[in-house]
Length: 613
Image 1 (cartoon, rainbow, N blue to C red):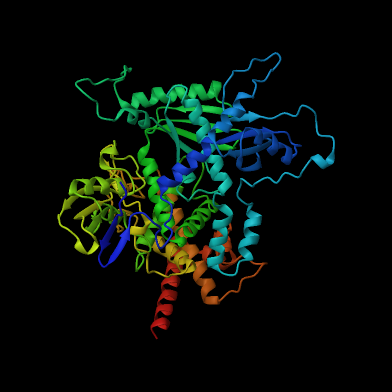
Image 2: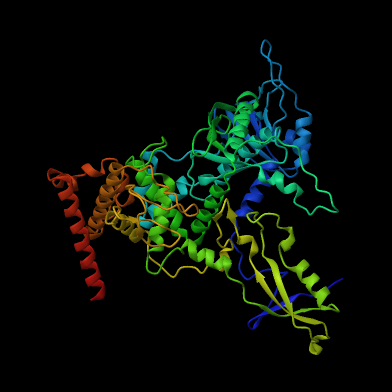
């Protein structure tokens, strides 16, 4: 039956089917779905160093159209090739042979990681096209300083650093492909499982060269049979039972670790770290060059990744500031790739988010506010007119017409759904003579896919960017950088904790030097590992960095290619030994820092007075 569905919200009619006035940003779940589908149509090929790109693509095109491809170097030359259809991958696998290794024996495994050999070497120079390899690493310190010193302003410096360090399109594709290849291995034991990337690889704050965190999601297997059983029969799988979920996790990861070690192409240095708080398998994926950590049942970590993705997408200044603070921290050994008493990149990111929540007006909303938006009902859709004969048919048509899934299609509370769904409808039956009759009803729509409870923790927040009002704050990145260092240089870490759920300081519930509340597992401190000496080092460097920026602002230093300035000056490892601080170092550290702070406060007061005058 054909029908027209229109709703009236306020004074405007809106169609459920049709284009919106502005293009919405892609949701986290949409990006993940698209990337996963791309990865499933993609192959990884180890190529000879001398190869004709044109003939290479022509050969692959025999198996189907190629959507995209790129080359990169990592222990040799590699090609990432995305086909238009999955069937092309199967076609390529069907003509691929298991290599003959002479005295050694090959373990046969039909993966999507191939090795290409030339039957006869290329002799003619004309056949050897120049292969353009995509960069998969961040710039050297020397190159970065050159770029920063050539920038026009501090704002330009922060944005330049972001552009140079952020994950490229190709690097993101390679990360999803690596997860997909590991999924192929895990599927031998758990058909229908999913290996999902999380953390820096997907939250928009990852830099080139960062580790690849992934988790084995077995919940999808459980969802295969969530449909309602018919009749009086209920069928269940025969399974092995273990005393606890942790033991089940350890056993699963132990088996997967063994499988990767013995059968996983390109997986080397496999370590099974099963007694950690979050058991994991650590390994290097040689072909991609990624250091990988594989966990299981880690849906809260994926939810945290989605939250950071939303914060990073809400305002362009967020990612630029986070990348710069992280780079600054690494330059001064405040963070490290080795576990220890250092501040982590995640903690620094949360500190930046908290700082931006504290601005006036706030640049970022609190997590509680995002939860409130998710819990809030949309305004009732009045005058819902459908050209059908009865309210019952109208309700059925409405359910079919609303974008997204219907309520009964949601098997799990934390299963993501791309659109809104209708959860209740009340009808006011009547005729509309001015448009030819029909039924009129009032419909209330709630964004049910936002509701998310994981292991008893409320992980609910709004996922639709269009429902979050943009900030009216127009502060520059230069000002925010200075204010960040000053804010945390004066923060009362001895008594207050950082809480992005409420966006305000709270009394510390424990004696750890640095307390940053986990956004979802609120009883946990994500910075519990940080020692007092490392926290004090952070405070001292924050104060000195704020002082340097204020001094530059006061002296009106002009950008120079010969002298590091702005962000570049802050990244110098010898910042504490700079000429401007040499005399101050003769005094005790505590007195020197106190003088720096007084200088900062005095400068801030003068600027405020001048502005008001």
